[in-house]
Image (cartoon, rainbow over all chains, first blue to last red; front, side):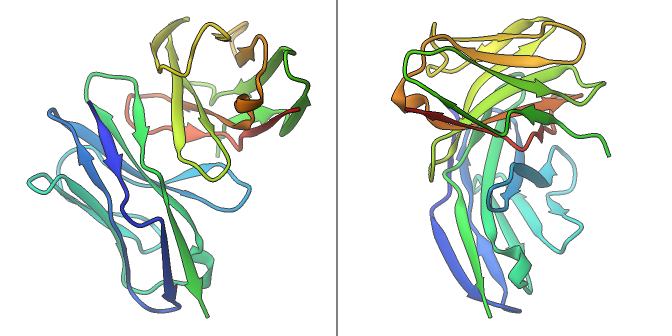
Length: 113
Length: 112
């Protein structure tokens, strides 16, 4: 069965510092991987996705994630965070051939001034 | 930019009552989903819907739940007899292809 693990429930980091939010998945077949961001009292917004091709994917606001098949990981990184990046970040996986998306438990990123 | 909308934003109901949560997916999308998020917890898949029938559902989606696409635009989630543990944020999502989901802002359901 598919599962998604986000080991860090909270990550505090100072503004302009780099950050990595970890995501590991388990699946025996090919997967699609996603990162969503949720700002307080809002819905989920797609940040970036891996479907196929280049294993490094980027978002328009400076985040990137790398699909590592051997380590079954899809960690999210940003070299320099801003206060406005404070939010909950969810990793999600969808197995090819199914309609179901499985979400991780989320990582609360708190950027400190 | 097209977006998924949900109404109401907040629904308060008494235990045992029926509620209907409404969603308007993006107009040319074909696949529709409901998720719930209990306060402070992860987002949980409930059901997916395609071609006017349920494609997949989770263990949470028991006989108390049903979904419907009554016309060409709305997609509804009905809970027949609400329980306290149904209190959560309910998110609707849609996708045109089986890859990227677009989420609505959610409906906060409070069962008293």
